[in-house]
Length: 269
Image 1 (cartoon, rainbow, N blue to C red):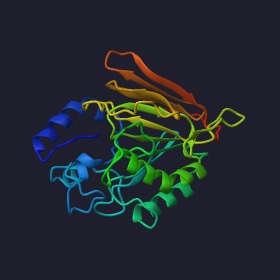
Image 2 (cartoon, rainbow, N blue to C red; image 1 turned 45 degrees about the vertical axis):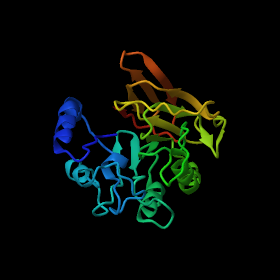
Image 3 (cartoon, helix red, strand yellow; image 1 turned 90 degrees about the horizontal axis):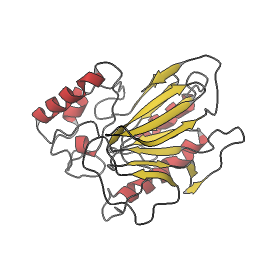
Image 4 (tube, rainbow, N blue to C red; image 1 turned 120 degrees about the vertical axis):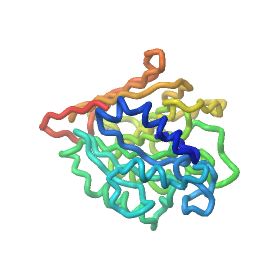
């Protein structure tokens, strides 16, 4: 979650004051979520009241990401060092035939893996999630996850997406390399054969305790701890480390790119 103004500008001001030491020193790229966008009859996908009437207006005005598709179309792409980021919105129509779907397909077809060997797709609601919230209604964790998988899982597999980074559920979660609900073995060279899905919802809001009684087999890590995640990426390696508020490691893992380039480059997020 980037911020939740809840209809009050003062909360936005307070949030930006807190993140200024970080956001003023490095790229600060965001993705819209339910608490920034959703409200009845406002054009969002769910019609909930989570934005308290903001309807995405303060978010779009205060966080001018490189969006070129027009008003209320907050999907975009950017590159940072050896990483290509495709940022989507789960709060808008994302089904086949939608403007957003066409944008996603178009970008994935054009990614130059020699230029950016890492491909990360970011959005708010998870595509895989350990959560007991399964309905009723159109916005349950498991319901939306199924719709995202039905729409994008085969596509992400085909275009060799490395990871999805999401939030929404206030926890830290990481799957195995997974496709169609099953962990898949790595390629012979040790690279991923399917995407990993990481839930990074543990930054500050109250933690979600609605985990399933038995952790789904395709999750390697599920933790209810506040913290942050550091990413170190070169053309030859990507390392993610999640750290709790006491400085202890929640999770760490390292990946090799599926396609490599001989040009040296490095980035730390």
